[in-house]
Image 1 (tube, rainbow over the protein chains, first blue to last red):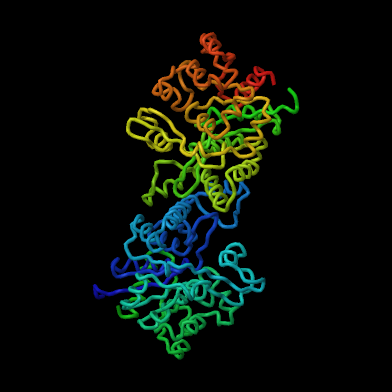
Image 2 (image 1 turned 180 degrees about the vertical axis):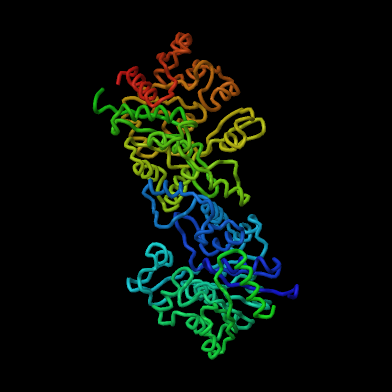
Length: 311
Length: 311
């Protein structure tokens, strides 16, 4: 691998954080930039919460809850117990350790720092070396149009547990949102862009909708990793959404969602039979073990992704 | 005791919270209004913190830390551990349970509620029935002029542990601060005002400096309880400050600080010998056991205070 190689990972959610962590294990810090979805961001209890940034932050810092993949290890819930006793809203769980991230972020944003600057500070404090960047410093808010009306993302995802049937997804503010200079620069000089095994609609969709990012991704060698294995999502509502939005609930459905954008799609060995159909769409199909149970699995998948793309 | 009796307690700090809790045990809710010092209030980590209001809130709700008298029982420190790991400021400890109070208060203040409204909501949620009122909805900030310069109160009190020798105390904003309508009304119809055994300079001083409160207290029957017992403060820097500001470190020093304002001073049996000198100042001296170790001690002292004043 060339020492001057430059890789950009697009990530959101638990699967994305796992592969981002794998890439961080096998690349040198200056070789990797991780661009993270902020469409899930919201204000709650007066705090600025960036769930996907935090999932990646905690995964890379080695402080994530190993059972859930999100949130913090050795987490406590005294804050939430107290909020509940005050009759405050308790539909979104904020752990005692996790809360420090939101309080510090909120304070720094109010003091005028950009989300990019705040994230850089938080990541540096936890010893994270690769660049960890929000997709934009401008607010983008994912909204899900469902059978019960349009819902703010966290209402759909957490409060309603993705139960209402989705009809469409939109990213409020995305058209006006610009990528930060750091994101633009990283994409422009990327030798490879890796689309992590994140939800293509809810996690990658918002990133691609930010002004200029889709074009920048299209212009570079790009490999995606399918978040659907054996017709199921390893985590989250990707499978349910694929079906509701009229797509094939399979790695082939993922291939179709990324046609014209990516050059390669890594699919799990379980889905090897789909490779010919994926290749017929014009994508190179890479077949590999893709389920990441351990830190070593993450590194192994990262190596396989890089090798497949020849970097 | 007449059912239409109306008592106002002025309080701040742990001793004040204890007697306020005693009064709440022996009076019916509609008979008691507690007016609390907000000179210690400050903004920290972007949160609006009202230490004295919270000490009274927790004492009356029965959720205070029984060992310290302030903060919450069964408190956790994961938030602070996490703040420290991020390199955030850790000189002021915010417990995981306690934090809920600050987060909810901050959110409601930002949404436009007054501190009076926010406090009413928090108290009601914890089942507190007597009126619990901040001395003012306008910001007052206690500042201590010391040998190392003027310090913000929490810097003096927490960060520097009251170590620098004090020369004077001032209450920034107090002259412009107005009591809320609820405080004005309670004072105007008070059959008795009780000045709790709080620090006369740091806890009661700010309350009395708010526009119109000193005059209102002077106009009503008033009893103070000495926070100095046997020449020592039961808690906090009252004794040290009395000495540094040139006062006698004794119940007599307290009497001199309240001359012209209160009609009666309750002093501990340990200080019975000072009664004649106190009475020579024109105050009636009441001698009683005044150290509150248990909830029953609080109620007993409250009963003694009320009986001494004939209510």
